[in-house]
Image (cartoon, rainbow, N blue to C red):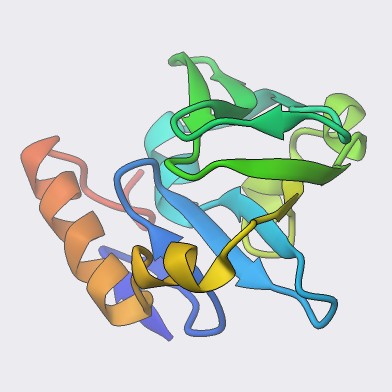
Length: 147
């Protein structure tokens, strides 16, 4: 497992580092998407998540969820067009799940028309950790282990 300033970056998924999302392809070909530990740590504590509802198409650059912390309200955007197949509605009542386990808590499940094209634009854990390190440095963020 890669790390970036104490933030875990698991090897079993791919990453889109600009929006700090993880992507994990399931056996059925659908792709679970979630928020990285780096994003959660930088937000300090997620207090609300509103995932995009199932059955909705999203265009490249649109949000898969709105995430609120004590520090900010932000859209979790994906640079890829897709259809939302499942939405983790449990997050509406239990947003703290992403604080406790960002890699065990998916936000939406997407269907991509061309997974191979999407996959080609994502990075593996080591490259993601390096990109996260650069971002933390630029934003003077100490990391997941810092108080």
